[in-house]
Length: 108
Image (tube, rainbow, N blue to C red; front, side):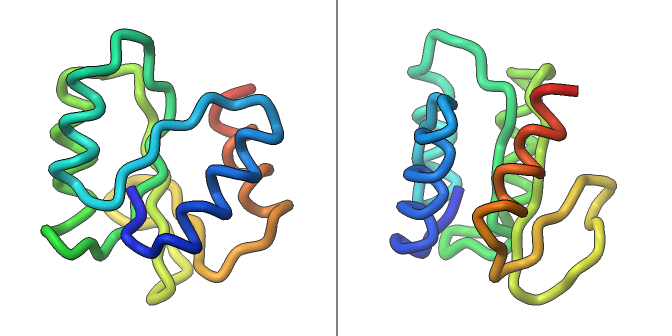
Protein backbone atom coordinates (compact mmCIF):
# COMPACT_ATOMS: atom_id res chain seq x y z
CA UNK A 1 0.00 0.00 0.00
CA UNK A 2 1.58 3.19 -1.20
CA UNK A 3 -0.29 6.30 -2.27
CA UNK A 4 2.62 7.96 -4.09
CA UNK A 5 2.51 6.61 -7.65
CA UNK A 6 6.24 7.00 -8.33
CA UNK A 7 7.21 5.17 -5.13
CA UNK A 8 4.64 2.43 -5.79
CA UNK A 9 5.92 1.95 -9.36
CA UNK A 10 9.55 1.87 -8.15
CA UNK A 11 8.71 -0.82 -5.60
CA UNK A 12 6.74 -2.85 -8.12
CA UNK A 13 9.42 -2.63 -10.82
CA UNK A 14 12.26 -3.54 -8.47
CA UNK A 15 10.52 -6.45 -6.78
CA UNK A 16 9.02 -7.83 -10.01
CA UNK A 17 12.54 -7.77 -11.43
CA UNK A 18 13.64 -9.91 -8.50
CA UNK A 19 10.96 -12.48 -9.34
CA UNK A 20 8.34 -11.53 -6.77
CA UNK A 21 4.66 -11.35 -7.70
CA UNK A 22 3.34 -7.90 -6.81
CA UNK A 23 -0.19 -6.75 -6.01
CA UNK A 24 -0.40 -2.94 -5.98
CA UNK A 25 -2.77 -0.69 -4.07
CA UNK A 26 -2.76 3.05 -3.58
CA UNK A 27 -4.88 2.99 -0.44
CA UNK A 28 -6.23 0.71 2.27
CA UNK A 29 -9.72 0.05 0.90
CA UNK A 30 -8.25 -0.92 -2.49
CA UNK A 31 -5.72 -3.20 -0.80
CA UNK A 32 -8.53 -4.90 1.12
CA UNK A 33 -10.49 -5.45 -2.11
CA UNK A 34 -7.42 -6.87 -3.86
CA UNK A 35 -6.70 -9.15 -0.91
CA UNK A 36 -10.25 -10.51 -0.89
CA UNK A 37 -10.22 -11.07 -4.66
CA UNK A 38 -6.76 -12.69 -4.76
CA UNK A 39 -6.96 -16.47 -4.53
CA UNK A 40 -3.26 -17.04 -3.90
CA UNK A 41 -1.16 -16.45 -0.83
CA UNK A 42 0.02 -13.02 0.24
CA UNK A 43 3.29 -13.34 2.12
CA UNK A 44 4.29 -9.73 2.77
CA UNK A 45 2.59 -6.35 2.97
CA UNK A 46 4.68 -3.23 2.35
CA UNK A 47 2.59 -0.50 3.90
CA UNK A 48 2.95 3.25 3.98
CA UNK A 49 2.06 4.49 7.46
CA UNK A 50 0.22 7.55 6.15
CA UNK A 51 -2.45 6.92 3.53
CA UNK A 52 -5.17 9.29 2.28
CA UNK A 53 -7.97 6.98 3.45
CA UNK A 54 -6.48 6.32 6.91
CA UNK A 55 -3.75 4.66 8.91
CA UNK A 56 -1.76 2.07 6.96
CA UNK A 57 -1.24 -0.08 10.07
CA UNK A 58 -4.98 -0.47 10.59
CA UNK A 59 -5.57 -1.53 6.98
CA UNK A 60 -2.66 -3.99 7.17
CA UNK A 61 -4.06 -5.52 10.36
CA UNK A 62 -7.43 -6.05 8.64
CA UNK A 63 -5.75 -7.90 5.78
CA UNK A 64 -3.57 -9.98 8.11
CA UNK A 65 -6.64 -10.99 10.10
CA UNK A 66 -7.75 -13.03 7.08
CA UNK A 67 -4.20 -13.87 5.94
CA UNK A 68 -2.29 -14.65 9.14
CA UNK A 69 0.81 -15.85 7.28
CA UNK A 70 1.37 -12.36 5.85
CA UNK A 71 4.17 -10.29 7.36
CA UNK A 72 4.06 -6.50 7.56
CA UNK A 73 6.82 -4.01 6.78
CA UNK A 74 5.86 -0.40 7.43
CA UNK A 75 7.27 2.48 5.38
CA UNK A 76 7.44 6.19 6.10
CA UNK A 77 9.57 9.23 5.59
CA UNK A 78 8.81 10.43 9.13
CA UNK A 79 10.70 7.92 11.29
CA UNK A 80 13.51 5.40 11.18
CA UNK A 81 12.46 3.03 13.93
CA UNK A 82 10.32 -0.10 14.09
CA UNK A 83 6.71 0.94 14.63
CA UNK A 84 3.78 -0.90 16.21
CA UNK A 85 5.88 -4.05 16.64
CA UNK A 86 6.51 -4.37 12.89
CA UNK A 87 9.66 -3.97 10.85
CA UNK A 88 10.27 -0.60 9.26
CA UNK A 89 11.72 0.75 6.02
CA UNK A 90 12.61 4.44 6.15
CA UNK A 91 11.92 6.53 3.06
CA UNK A 92 13.72 7.34 0.94
CA UNK A 93 15.20 3.87 0.63
CA UNK A 94 17.58 2.44 -1.91
CA UNK A 95 17.07 -0.43 -4.30
CA UNK A 96 19.35 -2.57 -2.13
CA UNK A 97 17.55 -1.67 1.10
CA UNK A 98 14.19 -2.58 -0.44
CA UNK A 99 15.37 -5.90 -1.85
CA UNK A 100 17.24 -6.75 1.35
CA UNK A 101 14.23 -6.07 3.56
CA UNK A 102 11.87 -8.14 1.40
CA UNK A 103 14.29 -11.06 1.10
CA UNK A 104 14.92 -10.96 4.85
CA UNK A 105 11.24 -11.54 5.51
CA UNK A 106 10.44 -13.92 2.69
CA UNK A 107 13.55 -16.04 2.44
CA UNK A 108 14.42 -16.49 6.11
